[in-house]
Length: 157
Image 1 (cartoon, helix red, strand yellow):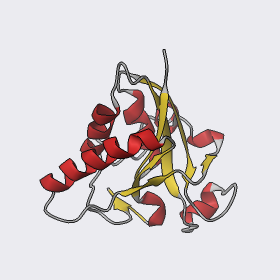
Image 2 (tube, one colour; image 1 turned 90 degrees about the horizontal axis):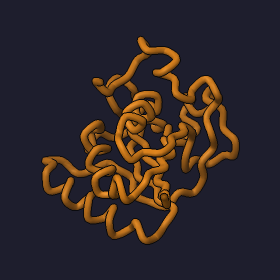
Image 3 (spheres, one colour; image 1 turned 30 degrees about the horizontal axis):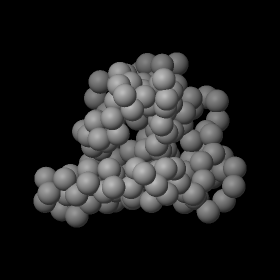
Image 4 (tube, helix red, strand yellow; image 1 turned 45 degrees about the horizontal axis):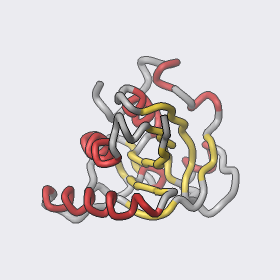
């Protein structure tokens, strides 16, 4: 099995990770901080608006889950027109974004965003750019909702 990796920011990473883990074809997930201005940020720094996005590294099997299908699943759990806010969470760290590591994904992501924009009444607020940096979040954030089933999540399971 060959796998691919994409980084998806969709608000609080706890719920996003749990959601992606439930999708057949997703092989592995990890939560962390992406595309911010500093190296090795802590959760405390990120929540004080350090500039990073709470992001999930999604490793998937493209034969079982094409990128287009993964992106459509992602679009179902975000408000793509909301700026720096998802659910009750507000701040730059809760922005939405698609961060790619393979330039072959650019036309697929572009087409998916174009189709999404056609369905929305307001302009999209989803960042679309290459992954500049990703730092793994602290261990207690990994699989947080599995360890804390009553934890807050803007995604309804």
